[in-house]
Every structure is written in C-alpha cells, then in structure tokens.
Image (cartoon, rainbow, N blue to C red; front, side, top):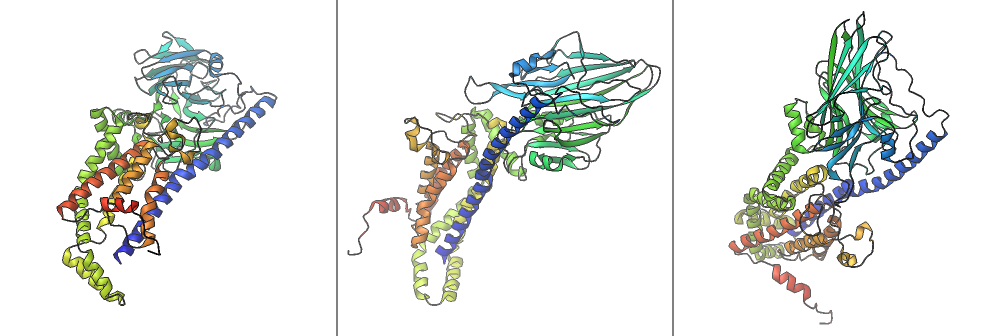
Length: 603
C-alpha cells in the first residue's frame, strides 16, 4: 500500500509540474511565434495603406469640446531610419545619468528616449534600449501633454503646436528647459520640463490669461504606442495598458483585450497613474492631485492601429489677468524595484509598486526578491545570491525536512515488518491496512513524509521563477563561465558538444551543462532510496530525471542552478540524517545495481 501511495503522489506531482510547464512556458512560446508573424503582417499592411493615401499628411479633425484630440492615425510611416525621423523636427536635447534623447518641439512631445544602462543583448557592443520613438516610425511610441480649448480660448497647445525654447536648450537633472507658446486670444503657455537622475520627468504648465475675459480649458495627457512588443507576453506577466485610479484601483488590459473592447473608461479619479508597460520598461502618466481627471484606455483603428492610455482633467478656469498652473509627472524608464518603491514613497504615487507584476503570490515573490537582492549587495553576483538563498531557505525549513527525512529513515528500518504484514494479510486488504496503520503509529512514522521535501520546493521554485522572469535586476545578470544571463536558458548544448560543433540546433535539443548537472543531482537524490519493487514505479524513478532535464533546459539558467544546488544540499542532508538514524543509505548499492548484469531467464 505504501508503495502505491508514493507511486500515485509521484505521478500527481509530475503531472502538476508538466502541466504548469506547458501552460506557462510552451504555450507562450507558440503564441510568441504567431504574434511575431501577425505584427510583421500588420506593419506591412499599414505601410501600404499610408503610401496609397491621397493625403497622408492631413491633420486630425478638431475634437469636440471637452474631449482629447486623437493622435494622428493616418500619418506616413517613413522608410528612413530613426536618425532621419528625428532630424525632421526641431528638438531639445535630454542628457541624464540614465537617459539620453530629445523632446520634439512640435507638440512638446517626449518621443525620443534611450536607456543608457540597458542594451538589447549581453554583447558589450549591443545598441542601447530605445524606449520611445518618433510617431513616423513603425515603432512609434510617445508621451504627450496638451490642452483642449474652445472658441474663447483660441488655439491651445496640442500635437501640432510648435513651441519656442526660452534660455537653456538642454534638459539635465540640474538644468530644466522652458518652452513657451502664445495664441491669438491672449493666452500664454509656459511649460517647464524637469527630470531627475533616473526616469521621472515633471511637466509644469502655467497658463497666463492676458485677455479681457475668463477662459476655461482642459488639460490632457496620453501615452500612445503604434506597435506591440516583439515577444508576446505570458500568463505569468502582464504587458499592455495599466493604471491605478479611482475606486477601481489596479486596471490591467492586455493588447488583445483592449483590441476587443476598443475603449474602457473607469470612473473619475483625483490621484493615481496610468500608462503602458512592457516586461522590463514602462511609460506612465501621473496627473496632478489638484484637478480631478477622467482616465481612459483605448485602441484606435482609424489609419494606423495604436494603443493609448490617457486622461482628461476637469475644466481649469483662468480669470482675466490671472494664471493657473497644472503639473503632470511622466515616468519613462526601467522598472527597477528600488526606484519604483522610492517614487511611490517620496512622491506619494498611489500603489506605484504595482507597475511591477509580482503576481497573486506577491507575499512570497517580494520577500524572495528582497532576500536575493540583499545577498547580491553582499556577494556582488546574483548567481551566488541564489545559491545563498537556497541555503537560507533550506535552513528555514530544516526542522520540517529533518522530521521528514527521519521518518523516511525509520520507514526503511521497519521494511521487514511491512513485508511480513503484506505476506500475512495478503488476502485481506482491510486487515493489512489496519496493521500498517498500527505499525506507523507504534514506530511514529508518517507515510507521507517523503513528499514534504518535494512539496516544499514547489512554492519556492515558482516564486524564484517569477523573480527571475519579471525583475529587470536579473536581466543580463552574469554568473560564472558561460552563463552571462541568469534570466535566459543555458546557451550550451550536449548535442553540439557544447559549442565545439558549429551547428544551430532546434530549441528542444538545447540541453546545456547546467540542466545536465541538475538531472544528475536529481538522479542521485532519487537513488538515495531503495528501488521500488514495482517495475512501473522503478521505470518512472529511472526516467523522471531524464524528463526533467529536457523540461528544465528551457527555463532560466538561474532557476536550473537553484534546482541543482538544492538537490545537492538535499542529498547531503538526507545522507546525514539517515546515518544518524542508523538507516542504510541505498545510493551506492543502487548505483552498483545499474551496472550489474541481469540474469537471463534461462539462468
């Protein structure tokens, strides 16, 4: 009965892990390939439509009073490169320790931004990440602040407004940039751009009414994107439109969702933020706390397809001879945990930490990241931090694991009695079960003890997987040797002799060194126990390390290293406990049995 129970538990755990692997790993990869093909086809169609348009440069129709003007959807997608697109308009340079780029003076639009500390690949010569791009590019992506007016206000700043630079022409953390615009109704708009040393811009707009009557206007902000990430998102990570506003709180809409719903308008809010997020980067707007605003998430199909998170404030009244100031913050950069948390605390941005998708099990994932990050600051290497984290986790669960292994050791010692019971009550399963339960009670044995060490690994395993997958701190984090990115799979493969044979292999054959080490340690751990007498169970125990080796090969290298190290510690721990309990360690005998010649039926 005991063997059967362990057999079914093993099968259940294996099915669970394989199912989760299929759902969280294989399915997203298939969708990624489909999505990449769809995006490419969409871009080609959009470029064709733009080229055939009779008047591709036509302006956007005037908005109705109190509505946000649409971002241009019929503009031409340039065939020129990024530099040529940037040169098509006058700009103000941005230069900070973390960012470089420029502000487009047409619309005072933030549409050119590169991240200095992040590159596309681990190659030292790899280009910097281009976060924001001009609208004319297929990858157009920008943040814009503007106003909506009426007949009394005249033309107010919007997407087509050309601003003038007043004084300093370069935006740095110590030198703000001032832009001005005056319309024909006596309204002067003064916009001050400032930026910190990281990723937060502040846009302060002052409206001076030099006319003879009061005016009323609305302030808007939008983050607009014309493409989607090249790599499709997975079930364990949100990518798309996001925000925290009003009583609804967190709102997350994937690209497919907003394409289906077209527009989603939550209730009005007086605080919060909204924008668009990728796996590692985000662009968000934080409206002023002085004005209530209406948030919106939208997908537009007129001309070029585009995704947009925007807000529109309530009316701002400016009396004759008076002025009014409205302020908006724009976050545009990497989702670094410490900086996101600091912005939330220092600038009082409601639940800004939710910009990082910690998931439903955040109460495990966030402490796991904190522990790894703290150890990283001590060791200077995330790989060593993961190894140290494994030791700490093992120490925390040591009492329970110790009890489990001790119970397993006691069970080995009473196996002769268990065999006697099975033989004595071979024809009476009820009495056999009762006798077994009495034996367990007498010897203080938990028949499920062997499952606890495996069960305890599952939440730790998935929380570590989440940390490796979502946090930018793990991106391109090296270990030692050939592992230059702990968040990516082991790049080596047994099937091309670890790079000695110059051949490109399919993904399923990329079985690297660390997955092999993990498989070997798993095999040794399973051989610490007696070989099950049932042939089916014995076959499962034999092939399970092989299956897991292939399965884990596509997971982040940091996760595989953790699993291999955890297996090694478990082997040592189990060996010490079994020795103290006087139980026989079956490892050597089981290994020798693999090489013994099995007798033929004739013998």
